[in-house]
Length: 612
Image (cartoon, rainbow, N blue to C red):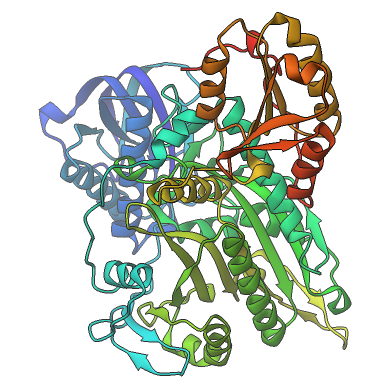
């Protein structure tokens, strides 16, 4: 069925003459008018015969979606035999129009149907905005393959024993909370107030009120943190002893492309839909579409496998508005997506274990640990990968919660692991991921040439080693909050601290010396600030600590005549005597191997604006 939508100020018609297939009319049906209306000119085609119900259902859903977007108040259905040369038989045409009308009424839409099989005169006034004229082609959604059975869970331990979640007991708080939530559907009450939001405010991480729900913005402190973590994700994937191709792509893909439509269908109502002039688009929910669209055109040999494709991709997921959460659950995120292209199952399992090890390594660098929720697409997938899973469990010496999806659905993946931390609110939170994908190479037409010259479909691993950039920052902030809960001073890793060193002056007579020292520190690629304001030393020190500056140095009379500096070390929460060279060495040695960016705001505090 083909359709042309017109968003109109009004649409009116009047019947003139019947055709041989005209439906019978009452007098009241011979004319009609609607104001503020979405008009749907509809041609029912030969291919629609026998598919009235699914085509009408698909068209009704789309009409309501477009009506909502353009803010039309009602819908007029107008049979129009001029959009296709392949017309259905008249009975199907009438049945389709009636079915579509009935479905819209069930959806509580005000709808009027112009009569079928009549010559009619009509007048309408098109509004003329970008979405006021849209074309559609409906085929009727194919019935989805139904699951056989229900999902199930077991706990697998490093000694190979399997337990039901109901019987398994452990002293590991994170694992038990994760298991009870996922397998037993038991939600734990929040433990106290949400403390990390205070740190979001401190570092200028906030919701953007002028955007859609779930979209964040970052003032300079949060912005430099975001970019540093993005740089760090690049460094990680290029440290994996793996050839990596870094790419950049678009964030919008056409649903007219078969592979895109099939892959997108897996995400259902979590997709951002963008109506275009001639085609509809989705906003990407990961880097998959772009990387796969590129790789289908690459000439790949088995000698070049495995390799990685990487992008820090802006991704969009239509999370429920009531569940959005700063840095953790957002509608726009930045995902450091790595795909590892492997020639066979053995190679994919080898790299799966390597990626698992790196995911744990990155958590341990923050003094955090993960618990594993392992999803299998079927019991057969579990049997296929059980040896690999046992190797992973023995390596970490910890159990995993296994989740089996319902049988009978042709998933594109076989196994994926979600890595959870326990946050300050006693919630198990997914951060890192890794997955084996056996379907998308064929879906997108990605092949490699094997040693016999034959074309083969590779197996593709998906991973976000540190999670999204936002979730990694969430982990940093949550770690700092938990430090404070233990009576320590909260700190960020030095390499990601927005301001690493700040010099404070006692009076204007010390400003030249402080500026000289700040220049040398800045030349050493250290983010340095200079508090040159005419405030008291006590206030300057308090504000430096409130700003979480890593090292704070007061410049007074003593510092004018001596190389010795008294430096407040936030991590140690005490003053330490050192020279300027020792301070620079301390910072540079602690951030060695980590990315660097200069500050995203003026060095001198007198030049900085106040952020709300």
